[in-house]
Image (cartoon, rainbow over all chains, first blue to last red; front, side, top):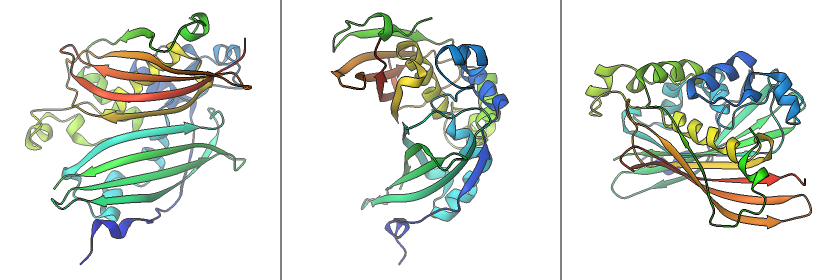
Length: 147
Length: 143
């Protein structure tokens, strides 16, 4: 019988998306983050950036708009989306990501723990590279499937 | 405004960082966040779907609350200094909830590259319920 653990090591199709200044602004406005570096290039340069940087949680925008849809993700993991909880989200930052950058992302299921009661905990890791093939960020996401 | 830890250079481990108080979460904010992030799960925007899912109505995107925490972080350290940022989602946020992001300096180490700091952070609502707990690591540049 198939078990959740079978998904350990599963690799999703890679996806690519451009970081758009308008999406950075839109996310900052939705959150209500008034840090001017996200909307004003002069302010960004005053903080030492080359251009407008992304918000710390911006990569969700690339995941959601350029990556597999949530329904597709759940289908590939064989999870009923009504039973899913987002448990944890973590990012590591290696180099700045700017408006205009092209991001190439690849996600892998690095761990699955199934509990006896039917609960399962999935860890997904995504590596983000820019147009120069430089690893700029990684993400670690914990998804919890309720019994 | 200059990030707090760049001005309070002598801050010791255990120091509480200035809290960020957000206005109450609104339904319109959830609609805007859905469009901005691309997370169109209808439990965040359509009342009847939230009701049918047994949630008692729409609930906020966890990533919106992570966004609030991210906003607080850059009031404490420069955006460019952040090397790691992680959160654990522990409770549901609803429209009307008023989130406060609190931080505490949890670690500080002088290195050749600069000062490495660790910050513990929590987002709580008006009743004190913890919505998100997390940590951030940052490398503060040498003055």
